[in-house]
Image 1 (cartoon, rainbow, N blue to C red):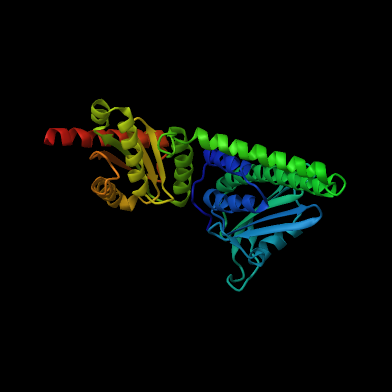
Image 2: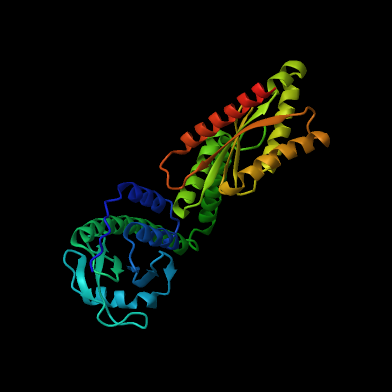
Length: 358
C-alpha cells in the first residue's frame, strides 16, 4: 500500500543543513551531515551518496536511522541507479520491484529516487529507497527535497575538492620554494592563533575568566541545536549573586570584585565540563546544561558549594544565589534568548518569594 504520511517542504531544516555543510572541514564531515538529514526529512529505508572525485570512486551508504552502514548493504539500490537511464540527471521510480535480498522477500515493491549533482557535468548522486510504494504527492515533495540536498551537497563537496587540489598544489611546490612555504605556513599559524586569541578575549569575562554574554550565546546556541537534533532535554539556569551591592557599599569594589571571582569559581565548579557557564554581567550568571533531569541536583550543589567555600575561607563574605531554572523542550522552536528570559523571570520570582518569607 502507498504511504499515507504527509510531507511538506522543510525550508528551515534545509537552511540549517546548508549552514552545517558550510562548516564541514572534509568529505567525512559532509557525510556525517547528509545521512541524518536524509533520515529526518525523507525517512528512507536506505540511502546512498556516490561521487567520482579526481578519478576515484567515493561512496557512503546510510541505513534507515541515517547512520553510515557498509556500502554493500545498499548494493541493490546502487545496482538500480547505476543501470537505470537518467532523465535530466534524475531517476524517479515510483513503483518498482525491489531486488530480493537475505532480509527481503521477492515481489516486494517500493519507490526509488536518485538525483545527480551538479546539474551540468554531474560527478555525484544522492539516492534513496523506500521499501513501500510512496504516494505521488509525497514523492513529488521528496524529489524537491532530495534535489535541494543534492545541490547543497555537491557545492559543499566541490569546495572540499577544490581545497584538496589547492593543498596538493602547495605540496607539489614545497620542494621548489620550501623556505617561502614554511614562512607562509608559520604566518598563517600566527594569524590563526591571533584570531583565536582575539576570539577568546571577545567571548571571555575579564574579571572571572568565565564566558561573557557573547560567549554564552555562541556556545549555548550550539548546544541547543545539538539537543534539538538528538531530542535531548536541556536546561537554562539563571543565577543572581545576592548581597553584592552591600559588599561593594560597605567594603569597596575591590572586595566586591574578589567576591565575584570566588562566586564565579563556585558557580563553575557546580557544573560539568560539558555545560556552558558564563557571567552575563554585574552579579548575573547563567549556565546551559544538556542534562535537564539533574537540575535539582545542580541547584543543591550550587548552594552547598557556596556554603563550603565560605566555611573554608575561599569566600570572604557569605553569599547566596537566587536561581531560576527553565527546561528547554527539544521540540520547541523558541530561541535561546526566550529561554534565558524565562529563567531570569523564574530567578526573580524566587528572589521575591525569599524576600516575602523573611
